[in-house]
View 1 (cartoon, rainbow, N blue to C red):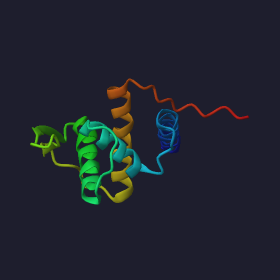
View 2: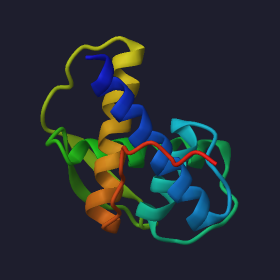
View 3: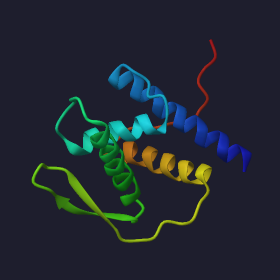
View 4: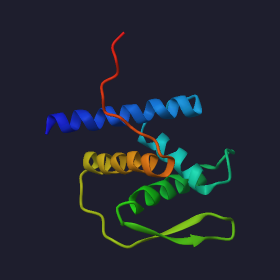
Length: 127
């Protein structure tokens, strides 16, 4: 179990490093990565978002990454071009740490499938 958790954490850190190389800034946490996914899925490019829009972007990202496991399905876009999702399968009841791990797993899958990234769990070479 421990080795699997270590591999998973290495893959998460590798994703954060790839994002840093791509956008020039390393996201602080899962919320930062979800925000980036939400902006990408909205497809309107970078702009200034209100607090409510930022929450909506994170919701879009959560629905998108969990759609990869069949939990959500895209219903369509509203008049402003914002995607709307429908839950089609109930999420398992998890504590906060398990919820975060589930989201991180699907975020990694999102970048592998949507962007074709290879996210390796090999330890970084020591200098």
